[in-house]
Length: 312
Image (cartoon, rainbow, N blue to C red; front, side, top):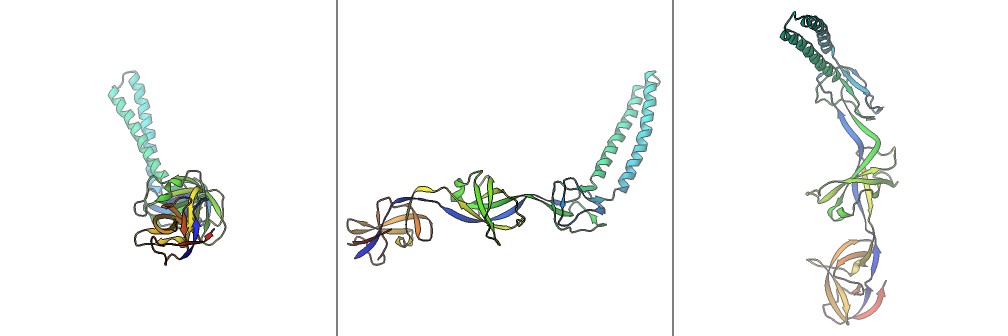
């Protein structure tokens, strides 16, 4: 029978894949108070930007300040006692041990004052970095504990893009590589630069987590948004591509029919990626082979065939 054939040749082929990704804030944190108490001042403006160090909430500290005032009075008295005993020690009016006890009392009170001052500072909740405040879940006057979430702050001045690539492409991802992506509800192509990859392959999905820094600021980008990431790899200059219809699926593997000395020879192949009309052959073919592309279901192994036209 007469069949059409395709002459195998090497040609450059660039592999492109699309993977899902997520937009992340450069920094994100839940704001928790360090101590329990009643909120007396709440400055969480929902959806507004705050500067680093801005006071977000103030807890009641009247009891702590009362303790601090008491300790300051005790310290003043202890210092005067220590000064008098220092003068007596010079003229040997008291023993060194008595003076040391007085000095210990002064230092102990100073340490207690430092503890109270630290506790008072913990009643003030400040923004750890500049960012955008989300929705608050408490009101002024509420009693909070360290497990209470006052608000969530996102640093949206710089955004990151996280995505995963299959294990077979892990060695093709390089730091500094530029990737493009688009949002689910838009067609605009945006760019990001790869800054790091995970140190291991995820066993469940056999994929590598990649993190990229979005290069341009876009008001439409929100943390948590879904993104479609387009990866363009360097072309393989010696790729072997054949028409898709030339491949015969088998129970185990795939075959093609080669034209050799007028006979049909069935050969096992290993395929890679494919495009709309061609498929990449990784093993089983070499440049110069002649692959049958028509009459595949009628051809039997080692039967005589005649050449028709050469498909380009």
